[in-house]
Image (cartoon, rainbow over all chains, first blue to last red):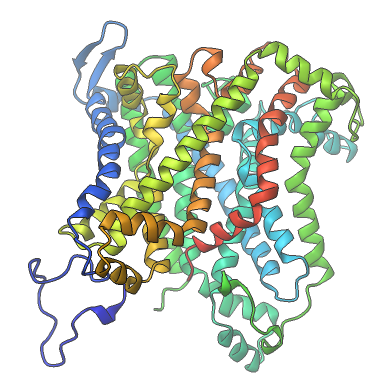
Length: 323
Length: 287
């Protein structure tokens, strides 16, 4: 928002907030009748109310009931769904799996996408439009198609990955049956899909760093690597925070990859790659325990909010919030 | 777009030429990005038996059309499913652009009481995990008699908080206030100003938002799987998922279906890929 539109008093200190005096939107076009704003934003708010907010409120209420889906009987049970959830080993298993998959996908992805962006940032790069376009190709594909391909590539007997592992003289790995190995397979799908997209985000942020900063750094004798550490990385602070938070919100709700890889809602024969959201769907649409599933949904929401907040502060600190 | 064009590369001192290693990395990433698509076609054109050998063949085989005909045997309504996906995606894209731009215009250029809180509210709704309300949404959709209709996919997706916020940023940056002032002096109504001034100016960005909405709709998997029951109403994703439900996984069949459901997107991408790249970079958080 431009500050020039706001009144700047020389003598008076900033006055406390007064709703009647101040414009709600200082950038607005004064000659256009603002009342139309209610009508123009109404479709969004009405749709959000019906298909966004109402289901969420109803779900929160559901969490305090035991629902018999067939007869439609709602039996209030207080906090029973939540106490059961805390004692449910499947929940803790799904929680650990979700964090594991999130960790081994997010961190390599961010490092690789910053590295790629740094290569693309070089003005001497030939064919930069081509490389940028290629980076986005994985992102347009459906998770379904990609999970089918990766499921085959990670296959135990004839998957390409195991053929390479075998050719190097090692034993084949049963990726789907193992805990860590199945997490690696799932994380690799996420990394494949999002690395290029995030590289473009980081590239846009790098191009927005003023070139004077690089000039003065190089005058000070900073080489390529030092410029990257002292100019590029600090310039990406907000972008890293943004990518990490968006990645966390998406990553902690991961379900499509494990769902398709395992072919069912249970996340593998021993739940080795069951995730929180997969567990929710399992309870909602296989077990028909809607109240319990709603409680899982609330738990996921709280976890996402807590982790996003922690992420926000950690990245601020690591990247050095000096401004 | 102009900010991505370097005015004078020679002015930047100490930029070294991209090393061999840099090009090698890019070539590797290109290979990794393309290979799964290539592999879909290889498996689909060779059949599962050819692939189940060590070492497996890496070249296209002769059986592609046989596999395609198997896909159509297993899914007689597959063309209908592709059409459904196309129909839903197009409607969702057009509606999202129209409603998002309308609300975005109001948030960027109109002054009404509570405006700033409503903008904050839009941002806040983006942070709510979408899965939280899915059970109740399912219940709601069934109360509206929309289960097993394409309406169950279209109606909840007509406008999103992301689209509204994005359009607000775009209109704020691209549409000059002076132009709207001049139009309103000429007596244009607020809706006329939106329709004949704002929409043409933001056409490029609208196209990008529309494309992303289309892709998201085409690739949506779980929700269509939950609400659609009869093959005539399936989307391409749900149809391809049906191919999996046999005991021994027929990889050629599955990959054939996956390839056919991805091919329209790849063709679309050839024409619009560069615009999508620009859209992603324009929308990036910088700093």
